[in-house]
Amino acid sequence: MDLVFDVIFYIFTFLAVYVQIFLFITFLENRKNIGNNKEEIKLVKYPAVTVIVPCWNEEQGVHKTIRSLFNLNYPKEKLKIILVDDGSTDNTWGVISKYAKYPNVRVFHKENGGKYTALNLGLEHTDTEFLGCLDADSTADKQALVRLMHFFEKVPELMAVTPSLIVDNPRNIVERAQKAEYYMGVYVKKMLGFLGAIQVTPGPLTIFRKKVFDDLGPYFHAHNTEDMEIAYRMQKHYYPIEQCLDAFVYTNTPSSIGKLFKQRLRWIYGFINNSIDYRSILFRKKYGNFSVFTVPSNILAMAASTYIFGRVIWEAVSFISSKVLQYKTVGINLTASANNIDFFFINTQSSFFLGIFVIFLVILSLSIGYRLAKGKGVVSPDLIYFFFIFSFIAPFWLMKAVYNTALSRRPSWR
Image (spheres, one colour):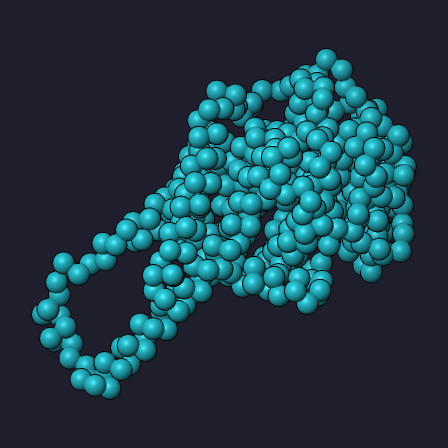
């Protein structure tokens, strides 16, 4: 049985190393094409853009979100804003209705139906060539939109461009752990952009050509992950998606373990079920790296994380059991133990060094992400928080998502 466990461990480790090395090679091959442009960008032409802000119980933060749109470095006559209150039970409607006086703002109130229904209401009233969504818990950097639109100007065949998401003002250990994760996400998303393999067009200010929705239809419920499903749908129909490294959007993240667990349970449940819905395109070469790399890599990460966590628990229980048996048999002799330390017996198995190497590759990814976003690498306590929280908590939401999928139990939004 130990041999079987070892074989599974080495397979997972090899594949994890392969994925990390593949992304790193992609980075090295494209590093000359990567740049965090600090200078102001001017477009040859400024197309009209509509930004939809779906709101549900966001009275505390939606004002900041809307003001960030007003402050965008984009011609005001070319920017249309649609605010949709999705049946909030707080004073969200009272806050957003005050913006109806602005000529480029339209405000709507509807019964609660979910974020995708609010977005679709906005789509019905969109008449511009380009559109996007800005979640009501996020704010856009003033240069974000013009940088996103610059990609469409450079590459006319693009159908969507995603921004770089950064955690806004993290206040505690949970948020700082996510800060490190989001920096790694900047790196990974950019590499997937080079590979044509992006799997999520996030709610915070991804910009689409309206042709996407005209051709492929509106947003779907998509297991409460409509921003993932539309990316799957686009990949199925060969609609290219890119990532703009220096278009920054700042987002609020869950502030507690409980809230983080609910969010990630929804995300992983959405990934599993969207992948099932689109299983016909998976592992098929004609759908490119999205089909043969991105989705398989995520499936691998889920399986490996769950397995390694289970093995750690199993070995910990086995170790404790053996020590209990030893105590019952010979008792505790601290003096003898201290005088018989032999460094020959330090763990030098290849699995130990492989584990260290995988950790090194993750740290490298985090460091590259930070450098891409900030222009410099850094070693931060956030890295420790990331490893501590995600190593111990992530396997639980992974297993819970699989359990919910098996029993067809939909996780709540919040």
